[in-house]
Image (tube, rainbow, N blue to C red; front, side):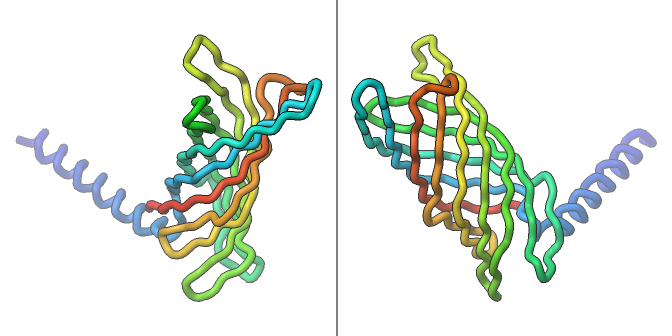
Length: 181
């Protein structure tokens, strides 16, 4: 009987602490989950430049690591990004990547905030045919935050796969998402 009471007290304490913690960080956008449409431009420069455009999709989970408070100079948020991409539906190549994100609030009104963000993603590309190629991608753009929802009207990405002299990939993103906690 005493064991059950102590377990119940510990469980209630844990629930109360969780509720208090969630209430404290409710405005901090601890997790962001978003989807985006991608236009990918492959450039192959040897021996003749060939350009191929493909449309795909991207899904991103962004977890907050650090955030400054609101002040006259804006807000700075540092996060860790986990990203999945399918660059093309015709010739599928999937990318799994993660890395840091820096977002700075540059303008704010009563119901809208404009953030500028930059990400550096490291990961690998695969076609699931016994191949995994190291990739790195740098993404930046604006983010319009409307409460717990956000819109990324345009994002610019530059990607290199497997080595310094490999073909570069230029990407355009447009997406939306939701923030939790």
